[in-house]
Length: 350
Image 1 (tube, rainbow, N blue to C red):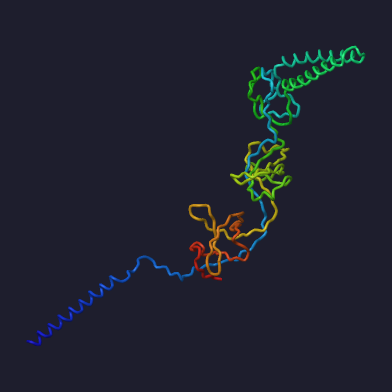
Image 2 (cartoon, rainbow, N blue to C red; image 1 turned 90 degrees about the horizontal axis):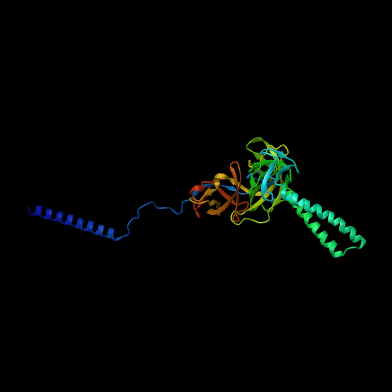
């Protein structure tokens, strides 16, 4: 019985010792560093990618710009003399030639000036005869001649604004009055030249050194999908718009067949020759979310280097990239680039 009690006592002591040890171990555990939650990144991991060596190729520089066609010349027929409109010779849509009659204004002022002119013309002839005979002073002749010259110039102006003629060939594109109405400032007619058109295009400043007066261009219109019309650069405006970073070019477009009309929407194509460019697969260029920033990754001795680029012309599944930070023979990441960040270690598959 004493041996049984001794064994029971030893067992209780062992259990107590184990409990003390467990509590001590737990205490040590709670005092030590805690395990962090989340994914532990192995900084030695390498991203598997494929690269392509960069090289420049010659590409054709073709500029494609939209525009709206205009009559080469457009004139508001607005006589300098106000008054009644006696007669309008044309209607909207009529074609006219240079010096054709357009409008006849009230003739009272013209008739009065004509009488004065004729009287002074007779008087000048009489004074000239007396001058030759030495019967009048030179001053009298000079005054008469001055009056005649003044009325002659005034009559020419009044005649031009009473009998209004077409200054160039074209078509009547608007008519705002009828015979007998009082002309009070708004243009009576609008004359538009259509056998020759013009267009203005805005060209990115990058192309400024390449665009010259006299260069040829091509015009297409959705109305005539199978036809191409010739054009010529007439004026290259000398300044750059600081807001849009573009410059203006004026085109002249022969239109003898009059297929094209002012107001038509058209595309302009300019061939600017060939130039060396860096062209890469389109999918290798990434876009920074929430912005228009485009970037690529370059293999920099086994490490991904982030480089921002500008986009040039696209060629099917290829795109031109422009950046001072890249050059020929650099290795561009073309597969696996979407999972990279600047500084990622690379494992390159050849």
